[in-house]
Image (cartoon, rainbow, N blue to C red; front, side):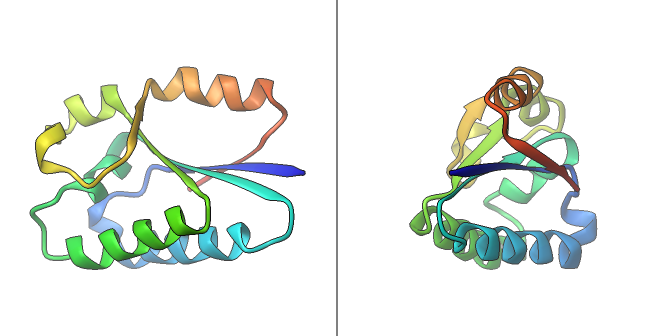
Length: 114
């Protein structure tokens, strides 16, 4: 089985790019025997804000990824730095970004950063 960590540092300022990354991750998740983790880091955590115009599109895309078995995670440090409150964000597993990246590298995952 292959495993891929998709690290997203693209925030709401580049919504079309972020939307493309969500789509690309779905395509990867549909590949046979492929485990995918989608990690939002730095400005990328802003995509999880539940009170922005693009929220319905992002929420639907993240739900679709979860249905495909993608593990959606967000960096706790980045959430704090960008003022994204846990009770006002879309669901994601909370992690320490650098620690999570190190864990994934240690497990031999391919890391894609955008």
